[in-house]
Image 1 (tube, rainbow, N blue to C red):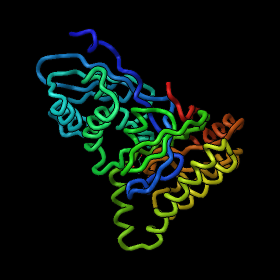
Image 2: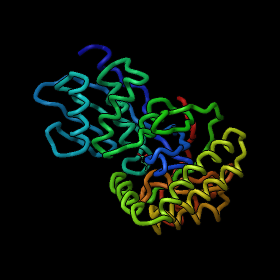
Image 3: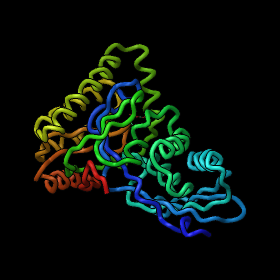
Image 4: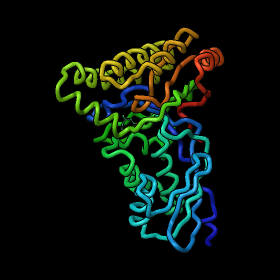
Length: 301
Ligand code: MEV
């Protein structure tokens, strides 16, 4: 085994979307940030077929299985011209919670497979894997997971990093897993018949630009208001659910300047911007029976 293959890869960050989820699928802008939680991976050559072990997620998947992780393994191994690898994945990023876990997994695997891989090659290889989880990902999750920081993302132009100071943010976990692919195709279906949903998508794209302006100016109250306005549109396009609505209301009552679902919705997580009130927000979420944590968004290390 070569030294580089024993090495744990640098962290592949998780992410949150501050504004523009779902709209980004249709070419609009999203404003997103990496969080300090993430994953790393080590590639160990083996015989008899590849597998992926992620004990924190209770995951042990063989390459031949009918499982999105196995499909990602197969396409990424083939693209990297590798075989017979055990991927050892470690980290503190919750799975299936809207925090970019599948993208972080693919970025960490790509780094383990091709030591030193970076830039566009890393994004391309990781996106091959990510497509096994979500049929038509916008690419925002992989971009943030590989580069960190804050960024404005558009399908056509990729990630433009923003030189903004990192922010503490509360992430509340609904405990309800959901499939991003199913949420994205649900929105696509509703867009066909509903002008309301189409307008909601356009409005989410526009709000992402307001969020960028507020973030750059460090105007947290304005950013919180934009997050609240995004949540109205996310409800309008049908991706919020009662549990998320209750968590968001509790976070706001506890002093959050802004709170919204993050990612695809239908479960997963909420985020709350509550400078100096993080503990109170976490307590309010705990009172509803939900786990939460404070993380730094815009993380670069
Ligand atoms: C990504 O975390 C959330 C969605 O915008 C899907 C995507 O961008 O691929 C809903």
